[in-house]
Length: 419
Image (cartoon, rainbow, N blue to C red; front, side):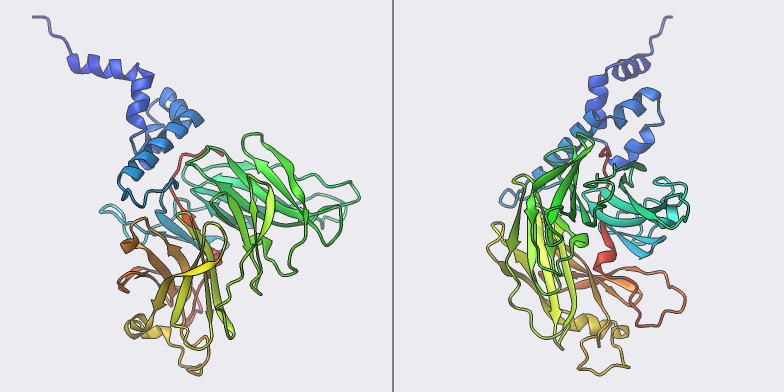
């Protein structure tokens, strides 16, 4: 009797229909997709294409928006899934913010080495910035010359999920005898709007030593271009700690002055000062989460109580978004108390803000804190807290040691974005 293998025939029909395969695969999470690249050369080519990434990202954003409250729906990219902590230039710790049954709260980063960026000298590579799954990195490359003393920076944009990286071209100087100074670079990437990213660079201007110039690199054209007019800035503005949020790069100074660069309008504008700071500043946090710009200045003696400020969308003012009280955390984790210091010392309590995690569901918005040996999550709404993970001890650290600050924390999102 003749039999027909209908199952095999159906599978073959699906496999030969690229549109149907694409519609199936764009619904698959990123990690399994990376394994599916090994199925065949055809699947490798399909999943690696920018066209597939665009459809996969669009489908993911649509599903995410459908799960959000209609009153809070906003067009923001993939939500934050983890934070990468830089313990030292070559040691990282990966902190998942949404552990699953198959994910422990303490696990290795999505990379164990930065060899895939530069195999010759991975130890010289430093992460500068992260933005919606992509990372901006820098290395120091030695130039071979007679004295062998000149160094130059090389910059890379990397996808730690796919282990892909690209080297940014050098920025042209005014002339061979007029080298430029680079004061800071910031990665700008909005996958909900475009599959292409930009890198905003603040460099010296040929107009005057007191003026700065913006250069913008586009992954679409693979070139740098001069953007906007030369501008002046406060003497203490920190350009190498830029924060990208809602189409603009933001900078702040220790004295409170602040600027932002609107990428589309190609203009540098002033931001309002935070007027509620008083006394000696103990620590600061300045960052973005889910399309919101946050600032925390912890000043004075009672450093367990402070406010989290948010910038209005029209840049009219900072307003108090959350009020924080860490007294219950101190009572639960007495190692936060530095007995060797005077109780009136602003550093009497050992903690550092790692990240403000803004969720579309306000009940889940939280503050990530680093206390000695641990990462703690503090819920803004109900003031509850929980231990997220323990940190691996480092030699010679004391029981009240803090191993990093907010500048050592990088947002991580799994993405197929091309670099």
